[in-house]
Figure 1 (cartoon, rainbow, N blue to C red):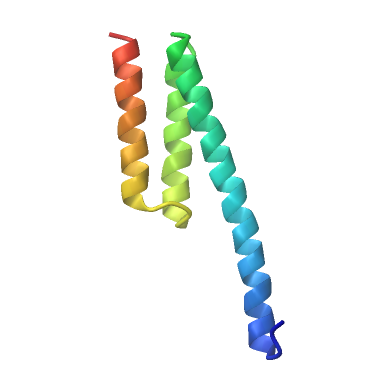
Figure 2: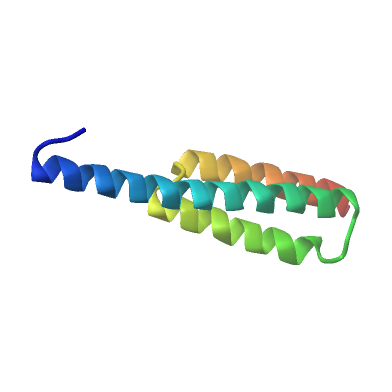
Length: 87
């Protein structure tokens, strides 16, 4: 356990940030999975849901939860999947 006040504060901050980051990452995973399921089912709502997922990816990268290249790769693959399904 930390002894210095600054170390105690850093521990509190890192725990809080970790909790926030995990929440965002789990939400992203759920959105991506749901997007893929809607695309596979060729659902009409897939395009709207993919847009929602892309926005969430952008926000996560902006907050530093995921890296920009990771965001770009996930967005690209999601778009490819969507375009192939709705040719």
